[in-house]
Length: 560
Image 1 (cartoon, rainbow, N blue to C red):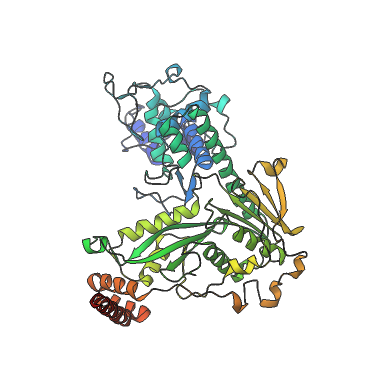
Image 2: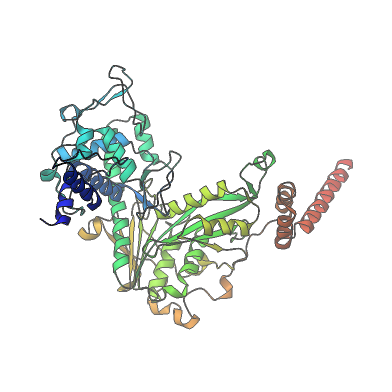
């Protein structure tokens, strides 16, 4: 046997082998005692430990959504894996139960080799404490050889998830304590979302009121949400391998207000700072998220800051980019908000893009209501975290810097002064007809029927064709050639001045409120920026003159 094979077999290095040989030669063949003085030897990958890692990977893929962060929070170790966020209501003990079910196919904990007895009505989420064995409110995790078993078996030669067989390779489970330890150490990028995250109203109502058959109803609802999430991931995967295809996820975030201080003064808390709305368009396969920052007043006034005109305008702005001209198949995902995304104007706009020949097909899908968390939400979360942890953010430009620095995918798009188009009026001239949009979640626009839309109740109905309807969305157009061709205008955006719309802007009263906040909480440099962009001083003077005029009229009317 060669030296390399021998050292590999006994698990020692060449230097250790040389010392042993010298000791044997000097001491007449006496073999010395070998002591491993290293602090914390490297753990071996056992079959049971590998089963936990494989399970957590699969669990994250099925139930989690990606968060675009470079490394998991709470640690200093950088990892290549993308952070996966599980729903906020996920309990670690329930995940452990699902792991045991995957291995053993049973739900009865007391029948397992490593039993866990839980006393009391509830258990704290993610608690790893061991009980003393007698307390009724403690989790009793009996000492067993599972700790040593999970760390001391031989190395596993397989690193592939596909080669692992639940039923044949592993017949035992690790203890709950070891399960959590492996999760924290080897799968740190799989995390549970914060408790403040949105909760499904449907699930919350049934679980809160404990209506008849609530468990069956909630389980079926969650399975439906899981199904649509899998379809969401399927479209992302398709866009990454199909040539000329793109998947986008669009969503609004809660607005932010500037000026902002990490140590917020009380006068800001009780005032009305300047508002900035956020709209994200995430191209998951491309690894980028464009964050549209819409300053207060810089939006069309017909339907408020979050109407259909805004959504169509920003989507049109995004699709007009040069790098997207080769895209022929478009996949879209959005939440079920009727005023913003799921309405006849957005449907008509997408049908218009297909009818004009900009795209060959567009699939517009909506996940189950209450279960719509996606990658763009992860980007918003990182932006908000950096925003709240930044000492001072006083202007719009400084907030744009926060967006660009928050994470790698985020790209800020400043919509200040943007010339909005009245897309609602533009598509309405063709006559818009929709059917049963609230109950359906997948809408397909295809060039084979350019003026029509095919609607499915759920993604599973696409293959079967069950409960599918098809209708003509433009009632006033008999031929798609009657529509304006995009080549005539360079691309496909509206160029008719008749469909322009004026931005709402800030009235003098609102500017006076903003100036009060700015003067009390901003530096001189920031005040100069606000004055240069909004002419606050002139607005305040006009507002004061108007107030004096109104008071004078009231006094004169009172005398009469």
